[in-house]
Image (tube, rainbow, N blue to C red; front, side, top):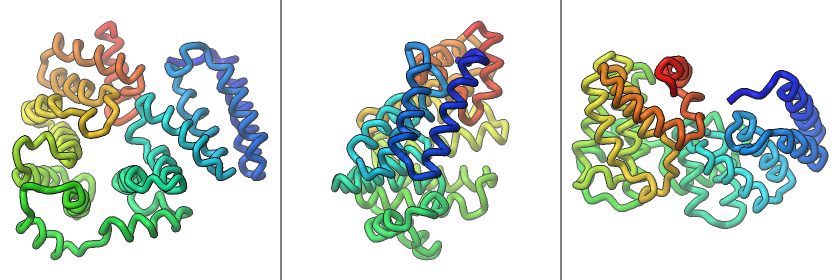
Length: 297
């Protein structure tokens, strides 16, 4: 949803003032500006694109003030609104959990931020990257990765799955993010390693996304749909993830690419409802925003 030009200008002005206050280390003043901008959002506030960056800005100001509990509360609001793959939100959540001595969740979210953005997101966060590096092996050599991959047991425990996931990310990206055929080969090999039920493994979430996106980019739409339908059975809640409509969105895209318009429309409606429209902000979003308008969604 888009704000009126007048309201958008008011919110942008307050946000810029908040950013200036942040630059001046005046965090209380920044929170005041961001809060004023937030209050201008019509209800329900969560439906507006500005909601996430205003709430995240307030959370960031509290983080800089070392009020980690308040900061975490705001970033959790962003996460629950569907921003489950935003690397900055995951970074701040991980850092807040770390400062609150919840180290399991700290590792989870810092690792997820690393998986999306790599080491670059920790450029000014060396303390947290150092701790993550001590608790998760992020720097295995490719030779060591391949050797361990071949000898990997299928009944992986949580720690082993973390290691396996890091292996997969490093190996699948060895030839760049656009080497789709190579990514497919690596993803299928890791899929075959998993014990049944394969979808019970957390790493399967990443395998699904890699396979679906790679096949879509290669225009092999039937194969993309095959993996999207399996992805639909993945239990987000059991894996500790928030179901923001991501599965529905990918299934809808794949049905649409295969000419199954009625099925695509059904899943687009579910995705839009679960994500409050935010599914159109990410990858493939701009393309399908217009298509969904044509479908009356």
